[in-house]
Image (cartoon, rainbow, N blue to C red; front, side):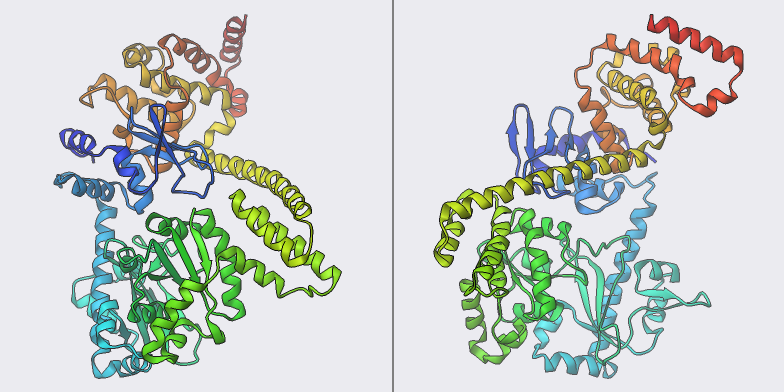
Length: 590
């Protein structure tokens, strides 16, 4: 159900899209619009556009688009009502509650309440006699009670129904517990605790909400860790442990990316409150983009074992792709950060600080890893190492950075600098061609996928669907055509369902005066998904400034060809009607 028009107008007037987006994206002016690097996919050249004139955004790289509400929905992972509440709180407005369909918002709120109550339950259980195994574990790991409370650490009792019974007594249904993923459904249909006999690590989002949990078993039983699956309030691909603390404790714009919960907690205990970890998954582009909102540099501090080093190698290009400076720390003695700091007692934090200040950047790290794999005393070893090193340098964007490392390689190997530079340029050209092919393929696939999702009928009705889109754009820019078009081309004449719905809504807003002024992009936010909003922005922006007289050619295509664009329609049409349509089409083409 719609929110009051007066409230929405006030919210829009107080929610300037440029101001709001600029808190997430570094924007630069280009003519009357603003551009920046898209926050929804990794890119090196800005293709993310803000159109202040109509309060919309569109990315020509990934196709994301919409109004300010759509932007907040996507960037904060909220539904429509939650995004409105987010903006209203920012603008100092109270959202009218009566008549609002906020079923998803209410479910999310219930899940957050369940998570908060579960975190309290786990923490309280840790401090009871039944939680002694967990408290002993944290004591062995040298965590004081202050840190245990700070992170809200807890214990999931051995009983498989302890939390379920506790939450039921608090008034939560088993269905809600299962949707929060703190419970699972047994074969008998009964809810049962997902976590039991594990130390518990609550995961808190950037707004301070408990959104998920990680649980560690204290025996040799597998799996060692289990984590909350995706829920209405949590997506593990975007979660970062302790980012809620680290974002306010950046060290010269720097984050430390550790491998696990205990590494992060130990680093915070030692005074390194800018430490974070990804959650039970390899680092994702989404996580890297979140880091880039707050930090300029990330120090990778993974374990020194083979798995940790492979994870570091995978993380480097992802972090660089988000525009972050990257350095890689190697902890001596194959120790993890916790072991290293504890091994030196009171001097541990100072020694770790020296490791931070002396660690090399990601290029030096990758070249060192390569160097260790070749015998540089032999000619073949030198050539093989050099060819691998060239591939590393070819991926660097900064020409000065490339030149420095080319010079270093030249001195190290006794090879002419110009020869190395020529090989780097050759590798860059090859990589550029390959990257362009990948980009074209990915763009084509992404556009195809979005086309299928938003308007799946367009594939079978390309010409008519394009005419429908342009007629929508023409009407959007020329509202005075509404009554004429309503009479000549009522919505039922549209072939594709999505365009029909969009066209009918636009006609209604104009003819029935559903908006105080001429319709704008944000007037459709309540009835469209984020992907549909992106399509609407694309339609409107690609046909900006369309004159009213252009409508006639699109009207003719829809009226004359609409019925001929589907093979099934042609097969089942009355012969006389089909002949009449063909004659009309011939007259149009003469």
